[in-house]
Image (spheres, rainbow, N blue to C red):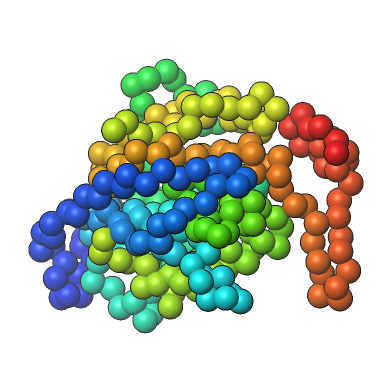
Length: 284
């Protein structure tokens, strides 16, 4: 029989789920931005079994707003999914943040393929069989040891800049690092566990983008299908905007320069950069 983590703080008592319908259109173009700076979330309750231990947890799928460090005005609306074990002491419970490296990738691949409480059932390292696809409990989940927060950078998922800022303001080596840092600070300072139409991952892929990577050919279809199902049906977050899992525009407009602590600007050779990736780039 599975053991249950329970410190007497209400574990095992059913809590009502709180679905949320988001009707905001999140543009993924370089000059897109939002006028809306509200924070809402869908909240659902689940039980994970890891190493024979039953762990009740709360899943929160929604938005946090970061502020510009210089003006303190709303800068970006970040879409995130957090998994937090119920009844734990937040002052001692670790929090692990997950996000894909730029440019232009959401955290959906990490969420459905790494350490979240649920994952896609695959035949990796072989090709996944054709549909129907399925989700399964993740025996490798870290939810027994840490709360888990999956961050979608600006221009991916349902994350976007807030006017007068534009998405392109966050597309760069240093800009990306600063924005992710601001989200983490907001979450921790977060409590990110806030209370909080056809939708899905964008289907249009540029032939000059990263989707021609052989690994994406192998797993792209199953991730797209199952993320749609998991987010809408299990996490109860629906939206009228497309979820951007990979943004080729972000790569096209990405600033690859970096200013080091001495003030020197390092900028890679664009032609060499294109040769080092699977992307077919136009050298500017």
